[in-house]
Length: 317
Image 1 (tube, helix red, strand yellow):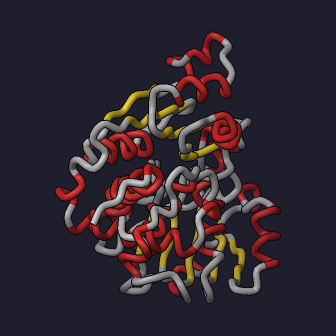
Image 2 (spheres, rainbow, N blue to C red; image 1 turned 135 degrees about the vertical axis):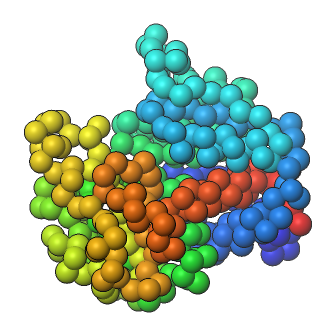
């Protein structure tokens, strides 16, 4: 990738949290992503001879397939497993030993794990770059890259945007990561929309309170604020994060974005969603040009292609 003085600044690094890369490094990744989107065929053999290991200790469809598609489109190969039961962890092997072994076979590794901090443990014991593909309710930095490149392409940038985050803000790692990343840009306003039980964690709200560059407010009703938003980030209420089935059933359909609510939104407001969705966005919204969540999923593959190239230090014109 083109860097100043030809320097591959991200080569060998790990991506565990959104702030692991500077704003300048993120901007470089986004520029690379847009080049790949414009001419994907130019990169079809960029990773020939390279191997990506996907270590998914927790179920995933989009993230895992997106990484695999990214590596295959770059001409590389993929090894790995899609659930913990398919790995030697089921025999009692430690995560540290798993990643040490995988480091013998692959050039970089992607890990999703239900325990917060597991990717950091993996990175401490790996001899190859490690990418966090989601750890519990903590962080999901490559989804954040996906969200940011979509915002950039659809809205032209980040500064001065009013962004609504709606649904499960307590357990939603995509929300936590996005807030962290966007908090580095001037003039961003967050509108946090959730029931009391699913409010953003205290540490997230505390960080926002201490950040003088951004503003935030909290509300319970989407319809009271949708008219002010430049972007609306919908999330599902995550059944797998609940300890109590009754609480999940009570809260799962608390927010449903439908065509009627969209009438109150700005003509250029965009709707994002990390997917999978359940009931929180009605199918009728899919035909609205402001709904960009499937385009967002496609962008995720391209930004992961750029990330793979950067961490491997592969220079492309």
